Length: 113
Length: 110
Image (cartoon, rainbow over all chains, first blue to last red; front, side, top):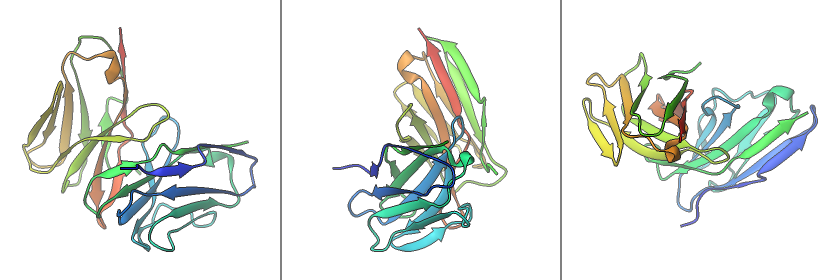
């Protein structure tokens, strides 16, 4: 069974530029999560989808971050404009349902210079 | 704000030693998960505990869920260098959103 796929693996951009990350969850998984993990910290939930609806986005900085999951499958996370403090690993995860085990992708390491 | 408090933040031990790491919250958990994360990878689930007082064993790893379901511990017996990594606890809140603690970074030296 294929795992959670994320791309790109690495991205370096200048501050004030825009960037987008892509996630393809495990087939059939209804719940999709985006996390931000700053070096030395635990993952911080940015947004959680159930199919194509948002379950929680209370920690998403909505002035610069946006995410969508239009068809309830793939998802994109965008940052516009990026700040230096956005440098982090962005992890995508999926689970069959809201309360079942979450499987993680390898993440996208973003460096903002 | 981290709802889950993990301790210690860092732990460095020699191979063969035993260790325990902790996860605590002021809220009652409906369930709690322990994950292990290696550099450059996403977290991988080790175990889920659901019932207060529950103890689960995974080879040399023993997971315990507090009776009041507000705390949990992970004990590793005879640590090996391959146990090195970031150990994270996670739980679900309000809308079943899954949140993590800050983690315990374990280094096992040969």
